[in-house]
Amino acid sequence: MLIKCWTCLRRIRRHWANFCYGCRRHQCAECSLAKIGRVLFAQDRSRMNVLTMSRKEVEVWRPARPRLAEVISITDPGAGPAALCPGITNVLRLAFSDVDRSWPDLPEIVPYSRAQADAVAEFVWALPPIDLLVVHCEAGISRSVGMANAIALAFGARRSGPIGIPNSFVFSRTSDALMVREAVAWVDSAI
Image (tube, rainbow, N blue to C red):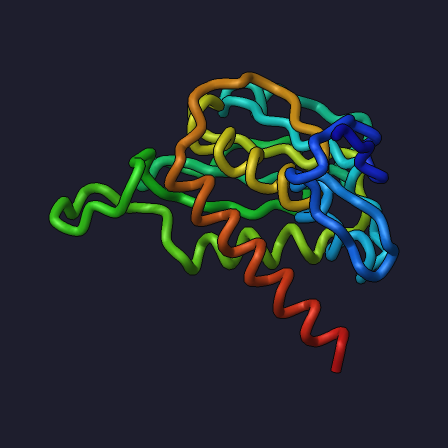
C-alpha cells in the first residue's frame, strides 16, 4: 500500500514509513530524521541549500551578501587556509586528510576526529535559519561531499554542487555527531 509522506509529499510504501504519534501522521525516513530539529527549534532548515565547492572555486566565489555567508572550510593538514572573500566572517576551518578510516600507524595522515565532527555539529546547530551553507575541500568531491550529504540528510535540506564520491568516514562521523547533538538538544528542551 502506498501512502504520502506528510512533509515532502513523496509516495512511499507503508512499511517504510515512520509514524509520528505526536501529530498522528506518516513520514519517510529522511523527513523523520530532520523533524526533531525543525519542530524543537522552529528553524525551518529544509529551505537551506548545502553547496559543495573546491578550494579554487571558493577562493574566487563572491557572494552577494558576504556577511550572511556561512562556510565550512576543509583543507589538507599543513596547507594554508583558503583565501575566502574578505566579508565572510562565519567560517569553521578544519584540517584533516582525505582517508576513509582512521590510520593510527601513519603519522603524516591526520584523520577526521570526533572533536572536529562535534565542532561541525555545534557550528551547524548554532546557525540561524539560512539559505546557503558552503562546504569546501581541496577538490570538492570527497570530504566536502560526505559532510554536505550528512548535513543535508540531518536537516532535510537541499544539496547542490558536484556529486563526487563522498568520503564514507566523514559522512558517518558527521552524521553521528549531528544525531548526538540533536539528542542533547532534545533532552535539554524537555527539561
